[in-house]
Amino acid sequence: MNKATIEENTEQEKTNEQESPEKKIFTKRRIARLAFIILLIGLVAFVTIRLCDNSKFVVTFYEIEDEKIDNRIRIVHLSDLHLKEYGENNSELVNEIIRLKPDLIAMTGDMVDMNETDYSVVVELCRQLVGVAPVYFCYGNHEKEVIRVKQTSTVNVDLENLGVHVLHNRCETINVNGNLIDIGGLSANPQALDAEYSQDFWQRYIKKENYKLLLVHYPQYFFKGGPLVNSNVDMALCGHLHGGIVVIPFVGGLYHSVSGFFPQFTDGARKVNNTWVVVSRGIGGKIRINNPPELVVVDIY
Image 1 (spheres, rainbow, N blue to C red):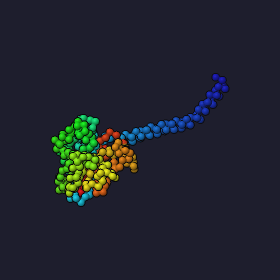
Image 2: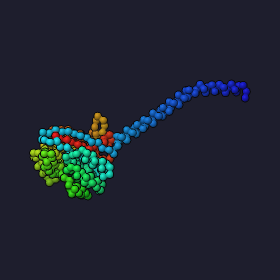
Image 3: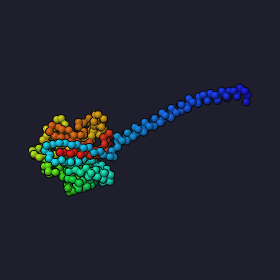
Image 4: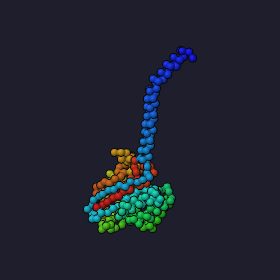
């Protein structure tokens, strides 16, 4: 190797030594960027999974004061189960309801699914719940479809045989902790149907003088212009809207197949004239984003 070659190699080594710190910095930056991207992807995935995780339900409490009630009443309100199970035989749901110690349990429809013929999930759930507190059940659109339209289900008969009070356009007067309650179940809009289906019941019910607790699947009956806006009812328990399916922060529910985009009053409790309307987001349903399934507890005192 001649002298020129040795000098050339020496110069190259010096150059490599000079560039080495910069390359190290560049490499560290690339690693940092890659780590940040991986972290960001993980965070997005985590948030997405959490927002769409419907395997757990939340419990929402409402306290409502009414001069007609002398002694506190606790109601556990379930709506829109759509055959969903939380644990084997809904053990998680049943255990939570037992823990809550309700005076009565209200189911406001769509506990079954019109596209399924096996409704044993609901029967087994009610078999357990009738031992916890009296259970009252009204039809939703899915019950109406399978019981009255398709006539493919006898879930109403099976529930009655278990001791469930199926309130299909009828009411019962009950004593709960010393309070007389007229609890009724309305299956559909009384203004749009013939007298045999709901009008006769409704006209009798609104004349009742005790505390009127109405189970009705459709909260839109209490929207502006709805048929029950000026009803003589003390409290209505509703479901149907599934919380708007997607809940946008500070905006609310996004959509329902019947009510369209941004449906009114998709959850919560509010007073409509003289009626407290409590709307459950539902405890079932396949598609829910930022909208966890909900078990509602209403304390009236």
